[in-house]
Length: 318
Image (cartoon, one colour):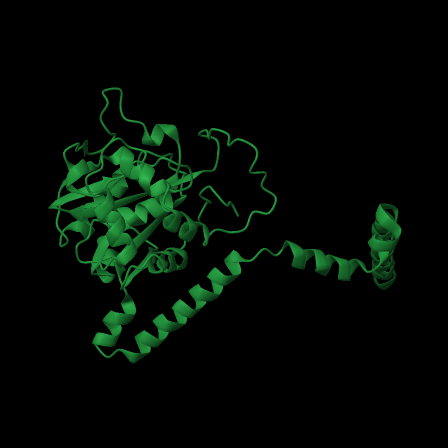
C-alpha cells in the first residue's frame, strides 16, 4: 500500500459506505443498482445522487472540437456556487466523486472533519480545491485504507500515461443541486449542466442522461457500474417498524465489514506457508532440482493412471 499516493479502489457499495462513515458522514449509504431505470432509483429514495463508473478513454471524456462537452453544457458560474474540484492526482476519482455529492447536499450530516474542509475551501477555485483535496492527509489515508494491498508494486518507477487500450476506469458524480442536474467530473474544466432538475425529477432525468452517455460506447461495451448515494436504509426501516427488513440490512452491513477486513489483508505470507506445507521439504531441502523432479514424477503417475484407465476400458469392451 502506498504511503504517499492514492491507491485504486474497486467499485463496491460496502467499501464506499464504510469510507464515508470513516470520514464522519452520518446516515448515508451507497447501493449498487442492477438496472438503469427510474423505478429502481425511486425505490432507494431519498436519493442524494449517483456515482457512475465507466471505462476510461480519452475520446469518451474529451470535449468536441468546439470546446463544449459531448453532452450538456459547461457552467463556469457554478464553480463557486457548488462544491467542484479538479482531479489533480491519479486514482482519487472514486473518493472525489463521493465527496462531490455529500459536500453539495445540505440535507447530509457531514461530521466535523468534512464540515471544516468544506468551509476551508469555500472561497477557492476548482484548481485549488483539487490541490487541497489531494493533499488532505485525512482523506487520502481514509481512501487508501480501503484499497487492496499491492506488495509487488515498485513505487520508485514513474507511472505510465494511460491509453485507450488500458483497462482503466473513472468515477463521476451526478446530482440535483440548486435546481439543476449537474455532472461533476474532476477531469472536466467546469461542472456540466444537464438542465433543470429537482429531487423529484432526478430519477427520470438521470436515466436519460446516462443512456445518452452509454450510447457513445461500442454496442458490445458492458463495463459500467452505477451506485446510488442514499439515506441509511436501517434508519428508514426502523422508523416504520420493519424488523425483518432491518435484520436483512444488519446482515448486509456485517458482510460488508467482513469483506472490508479481508480486503485490507496481505495474503502473500499465508500463501507461501500453504505452499511450503503442500510441497513439504522438497523445495526447502533439495532446491529447484528437487521441485522439478517432483513435478516430473507427478506427471508420470498421472500418465500411468490414464493408460491404466484406457486399458481397463478396452478390456471391458472386449
